[in-house]
Length: 417
Image (spheres, rainbow, N blue to C red):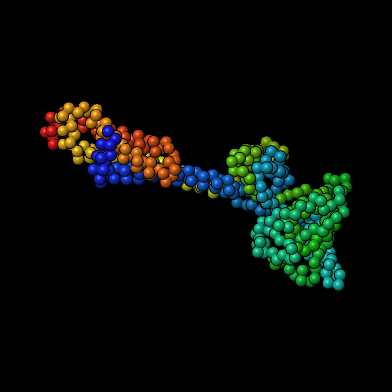
């Protein structure tokens, strides 16, 4: 029987090749669409893990992001053990103004040429975790000296002092000063800080700190920059409450974004241009004092692109499956029309319809199977279920067309011919 089928396929020539080629093309398309869909999902997962989701403390309107005077509790929200490992790249800016809020800075330069000492005009000492946090300063706004670079702004200062409110300094700290001060030959500065707290039984606490110059800026006189942790420690030593000007963090694991949102929702409201005050039953605040702007736009865009591409992929796959069934029916129809007289002769000679169906079905089914295996070989026959479903639909269409013809009365078929 199979020998006869092979002979018929060889005799078919172009029709046999057409059925084989179509099956190979459809299988190749199915496997390609599947591979593209898997690649899209993998691409999205990689993007989901790497795209930054930033959280920035803002005013209630979401417009102001600097000069917020965020108290220590606002900073500590992101250092809480329950969330500390879920965030990274905590970026904070804090300012200590001379003469403001009882803070006074008596500043004297040292390390100048010929050991000459001179008064410094210090209006602000700004602590940063990154120079980019201060607008014009940025990476290009600082000229670093020696082996220093922007990473110095993340230097920890906790081991720099001996314990005590006015602990002695063990090691030098680092600072960025105005260029004109450095050009006077000043390679280091000495600053004295004090804080007068009317509610403290010891109202005045004073500390003196030495800073070595790690770089200079050209933003004008009176503004000095140091690592954020250094300024935190100075304010702690003089007993002054901490107030951050700005605070931004990045979510460490985007898969746990909902957990981060849940944690921060108890401390910050959502920014709103209407600046509607939301009641907050916590501490001495009647309303939420700050908002938290969560920028997950890149993540959302990546998800929308992935969903669109996957939808297109599914539509393409559905179209291929529809073509599979339709093509199977068409192939059967063409076979019947091309070999109608042969089939009628077989039936006239008493060959059962079941045997006619079997021979024709096996003949074209073998073409589809060979084509399907050939097309799927380019993707190592993955996924096998799609290939099997394609062949099943193709066979179903082929069988339907054969059954429709063989159901006709033999005399009726002869008259139609």
